[in-house]
Amino acid sequence: MVFGKTNGTSRCMAAALGLLAVHGAFGAEYPTRPIRLIAANSAGGGLDLVSRAVAPKLSAVFKQQVVVDNRAGAAGSVASEIVSKAAPDGYTLLCSSVGGLAVNTHLYKGLNYNPLRDFAPLTFASSQGNLVVVNPSVPVKTLQDMTAFIKSNPGKLTYGSSGAGNAGHLATELYLNMIGGKAVHVPYKGGAPVMVDLIAGQVQLVFSSAATAVPQVKAGKIRALAVTTARRSAVFPELPTVAESGLPGYEADNWYGFVTVAKTPKPLLDLLHGELVKALQSADVRQALSNQGLDLRVSSPGEFGAYIKSEFEKWAKVIKAAGLTAN
Image (cartoon, rainbow, N blue to C red; front, side):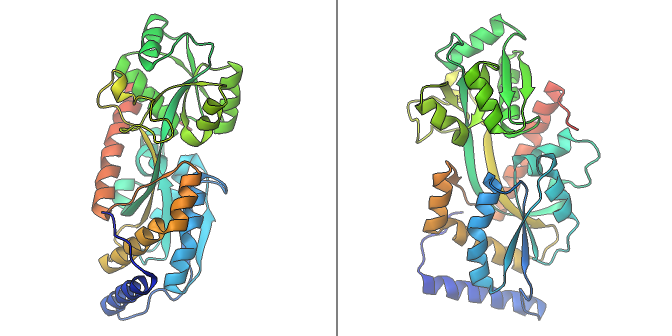
């Protein structure tokens, strides 16, 4: 669901009507205290950027402070567990990613939350595809070449990722699973160090975030073969998708979105959804996301919930097939 443009007066009127609906449903005002917005990564990361871009917009509408609380750890699981235990009263929101909302329960043992049970979806926020990039010394020009190379050299090629179980790691494993190939995984603690080693030739292949890879591709330090999204990149329209490169049906997005606590009353969910979408679609937030290579992506709660479920099931199969675990 994409909302049309509105002027400041109509937005204020819509927000006021939403608040009246909430007040009528509960017989009490909302909000009467600060709202906690938990970002499931450290300061400076993509989730932090999205969270801090929308927080002032929500504060202005609700006349209460929206406090961004960075809770990194276990690829988003730490933040998810905190929110899953919060009261369903609209005062705790979560900005998380594919890891915390769809992947981690398949990778980590002993997690005390279930994303399909414990959260109420609100909206997508953004998505960012990966670029399939290689060191120039690898004798391939296309992804079809890479597929043939891996198949003829099983287990000899090394690929890097910014951490076990992250979006790039899983995107690579999905690719390997679909081609029936084997390669050696080398996990790093972040996108920057893996890119340094890709340029140096310590690893040969990386399914890297666009924000990390694009500058190095433009500088000629690495070679791009394809994009992992369903559609081609606006930055490199000449690059084919993985699906176009011999693997129809392949798609891997590194997406972000907002959820809150399950069993939050529907009037509150409707209000939060509407204000989040308006904030995300404002010109300055759009620009802030674009500057970091993030594509705006908003939806209805139902659409977001259905997508989380589809991602949950999709990556469960990939993780099981690859025998992946994380500590």
